[in-house]
Every structure is written in C-alpha cells, then in structure tokens.
Length: 497
Picture (spheres, rainbow, N blue to C red):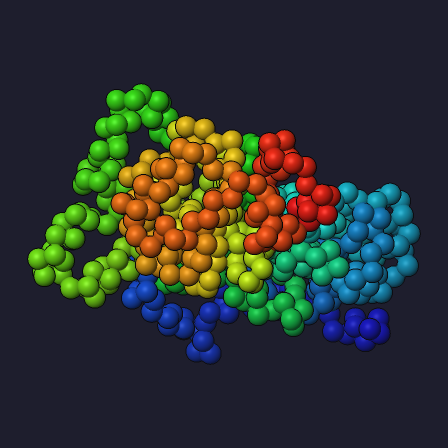
C-alpha cells in the first residue's frame, strides 16, 4: 500500500453509520423485522442475556477496511510476543505510522499473550495504537485460549477508559496465523465489548469493528446476537446465542473455579427424600421435570384410547422440545459447561461426530439438574441432525455421579425422536457389573431402540478400534486409570490427546 495514497483514504469515524442506523431504510424508517414467531414458541418467557440497547448500538460501528485508516482516538494492532509480527493488519499499521513506531516498540520489550500496551500513533490519523497479543489456538487447550482472547479485548477496553479515549478501532485480534477459529473468536470479542460497555461505557463514543471483506459476512451475522437493534431482532436471535456466554464480564468460566450450587444441595443426601423425589418425577408436581411435557401418562392413555393420533403426539412432542430448546438458548449455562462433562471432539472411523460424556464430572448432588438438561439439549441439538456416536466414560464414577432412572427417562421423553434417529453407537467405557445391569434394565424396560446401540468397552484399546486416538479428547484421569488397570498404551496412542 502506498502511504501517501492511503492517507488520502482516511476515514473519519464520525462519518460512518452506527450499527443502530444500519437497520434503517432509505426513508429513515425502521425496516420490518422477520417474523420468527412460529419457529420460536413462548420465547417471550425467556429474556435474552443481551437485550436490545439502542444506546449501546449507537456506539458500535462495523467498518470493512483497514483499521489503520481510521481517524479515531486509538486503533488496535495485533502482534506476537515480540511485537514484530508480520500480518496484514500489523504491516499496514507500520507502513503508515512510519519507522518511529518500530523504535518505540523496541522500548516496550515485548508483550505477553492477553496483555495490551500503548504507543503513540505517529503518522497515523489515530493518536494512539494499542498493541495486543492473541493466543495460539489448540483445541486441547481451548479454555486457556478463550481466557487469553478475552483478556486481549478486556485489556484493550480498560486502556481506552484509563487514557480517557472516546473512540477505538478494533481489528480482528485472532489472526489466521495463530489458528483461532474466527467464529469462536468473534463471539468472545462481541460479548466482551458488550459487557464492558454496559458497565464502563459512558465515556466511550464509538467502538469500531474493522474487518476484511472475508470477515464482514460473519460479523454481520453475529452482531445481532449481542447487539439486537429491536425487540423483534432480539427475539429472533435468541435461539442462536451460544450456551457459554461467560460471566458478567464476558469472561469464560474456568472449570475449577465455578460450580453453581443447587438451591437445596442437601436434599439428595437424605435417602428418604431421594426416594420421594424419585417417585415424584413421573407426576405433575413442584419438581421442574414434572412439567417437562405435561402429564405424559395422560397423553399415552389418550393415544391408546384413540383420542390423540400419532401425528398429533409427534407435533406435541416437537412443540415441547422447541420450548425447551428456546429456553436452553436463552439461559446462561456457562456453569454447567465449565464441568466439562459433555463435549464434542473429533470423528470416528466412519466420519461420524463423536460426543463425549464424562460420568465423574457430573456432581449430581450439587448441580441444578434442570440446567444440566438445558445444557444437554443446547449442545446436542445441532449434533443430532447428522449421524453421531456417544462415548461415555464411566471411569471412577461414584454414587454422587449417577442420575436417577426417572430423570433419564424424562430426558428421553423430551429428546426421543430427535436424538435417537442419528445415534449410531453408544460406547460405554470401563463399565462395572452393576452399571451393565442397570443399563440393560433401563434400555429394555424404560426406553426403546437403545439396547442394540450400546457397546461395552473394558479398555481404551477397544475404543481405539472404533475411534482413532487423535480424534478423541480423553480426560487424563481416564488414561491413567486405564494404564493402571489394563496395560500402558503406546506413546503414539495418546500423542494426539
């Protein structure tokens, strides 16, 4: 890029339309929103965690072009720990800022991942440059990468406030070179900036997301989730909001630090109360799961009596499932996600998605069971549209990790037709004799169509005949247990874990 020619293309932030204005038509009237009411029943009952805030939307600008061309208080440069990275954003900034910037960066003596450091803008239109270092992404260390990327945006915004800056141009911090999935990174950027503006944004007039042509469509797609421009858009985007939206600051929840305690964690410790709860689950009562689908027994009786057709029952089932899915997408489920009890990994040898369920990571006696179901529905909904397999690690589970049979039956009633169709195998790893008996009884008398899909695997080598080691993220305690009880695995078997 020719520096002289580029300076003639400088863009004044105040001349750009805000995100709120982009919804308006040519005559200045609000464009009619799409009607999603049929596909999202009862969504009004579940408010969005990111409600419509026109005051925030008027601070947000989406700009397709070089962040270095923005005339604002500060712009962001994405770099490496030595602050000498070669990437399109950094190259343009250095070219336009001049050699003085390079000399100034040498004085900073680098920057750690997740931190942000400030320099002058030199020959740029922006008065300051905020330099930050995004994380290198590996799926095995996803939580650490998420936390680091959050820190990048959070520290950027913190500098903006501390230096009394009124406007900032944000480039895409997660460069292609560092391998961070763009969509995942964009969610973190949007929610972090949103939460910061909610708490500290009074003095900030403009936050510009500067993107390339290839990034623009994704940003336009995800912006309404976090910055809905009307109540109708808020409702329409509600089902698309991820389950993990971080804490009140937008920060990812670290598994070891947060487990939400149920309102009455001690109730399950008493045997008599546990039996009472078990008997109540199948009835219409105060427990949350009693209200899942109304009176299921009554509906079945109507079917037997010919009062409700199979098609009517299927439609009722779909409505109930949609209601729960809508709620699952509306609630903050980050505390359940932090347990790492259910997650997607690679594919099996037939190319089917592999979902992992870790029994020991489910503290049944202290978590909110209803929220656990909501998280299960949210995570699995898009997985079940194609063929998939489940791997359940029963390794070292205790009594406090076991869901009651009535709870599992209630779950099955909700997800039956949708989840069962494309489930091709359920690999039960490290089963005990008691768990085999319980599973056989459950799949024989309580639910249908699952018994033939269950495969009991006593060790990991058996699992690796179905799923390659590099395609499944196995918890370390499972690997240690299997090596101790069975036999050590060859190094190549766990190198990809």
